[in-house]
Length: 127
Image (tube, rainbow, N blue to C red; front, side, top):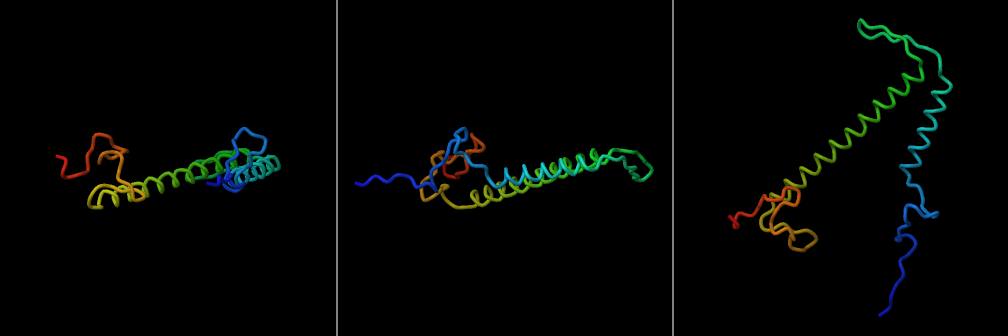
């Protein structure tokens, strides 16, 4: 039997090691944050905002930061909702399948119980 060493593409580098690499998302976040910081530093004058019957004056950098934070919250919230809907669809599809739940061709190791909701049994023959 020949023992193979993991290829560099499949081996994982520990996070604390000096060879750890940044992912594309981290690089994009740092670049966006840097650009936002430069934009805010260059735009320091006050602006007057009018909305319905309110009128107030804010520094432009604070308005920019507030809008960026609110946008990030909406973006993350939509991602959470999307994952929640997909999880519900997978559960519904799994519960609609006849017979014991199978993952990757292997019998379900939970004994027929929903892993996310222990104590609930989804098999009709175990009543």
